[in-house]
Image (cartoon, rainbow, N blue to C red; front, top):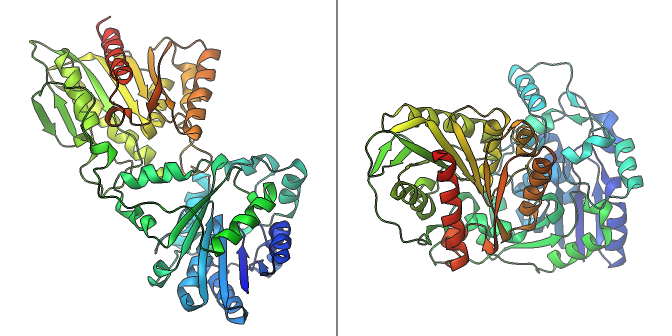
Length: 502
């Protein structure tokens, strides 16, 4: 006999699991849909002292009272925090942890990271730090605001209205108190269920693991498995039957395993063009690739994507792709510029934007650079950083380029500030030339952001040139060494340099 303990996200309660629970019971399982203190129908029991530890202790008591030999504990969104805390206290009772459409929190993390409004996060942090504040609860979202907490794809209108009407204020200390783990939970079998309409896929997770982020290497443990559901962030409302089936399969030990590989990571493979070596000058976080030329030359600043963990080595400016682009630009008479910026987490976009602005000013002040002729070229997750420059292009910015970019935050990227929306910013870009390289074999969730941007650009008649690579993958420069991809790089580089010289 397997017992499922189902723990819901912020503002909700055990009621949200009703259809899933019914289907699990039909299979013969015991099911415990949990409503924690201060949530759902137990909202009236909360006070300012209700915190994450309150919820952890409640789950520990529930686990102690379950007689079934196997306990599978499931956490959705915020629920993963008390789930991990309780499993860490009772590891001998837990057969498997299931994290439903949420990352795997670590010791010291707080659920405040899940709150999509930066101003609200800052207010709650101030209150927690000062130990004061009469407003000790976070109000639930209005009907039209749920999509900010995650994709509502597939949720029937009636279910969304029910979600809104039954939502309760969340005790703030449950969000601000850090999760404390001893390490025991790391030894437990774990399953992640990714909701693809919310921006997560197994392929995307695998691509992040291959970057070498040390925080993600644990995901290759054979005890860790993954499933996908083709729905939004609330599958218990949008796909309860499919979710129940996946939970049963997870309990049985099924699921996709990420493979640990000793092969060279794809991003460290050789650049697709054989470009000549160029002198490279390193100034702090910035590298200059210098051309053979007298007098100031135009510059192209190549901005890497991310987030890239702080511990990843080599850092992006030493990846073959960016070294290749920097050398290629220099071989054609421009100063190629690469840099390391501090986009280490989704909350770091503002800090990364500061790094890029500082790098640009450093480059423009260099006597070997024509400061009135500069292009900025953004890659992958760095695409969001183009928003500042599109919104108010300075006169010296002659072109913005983007290659397999992410041009809108994914639905589950709640930490990204609303300022980083290129599709909104392009409406004030005027006639600034934009060169966009689009790959045909892109992750679907990323391709959707490009199409959204292009639709906005078309509406405002922005000057966008699209270079299509139908058989190109995300990061094709070190993956797809074909004539098509080489032609695309030649085309894009020469187009950008043409705008610099025009």
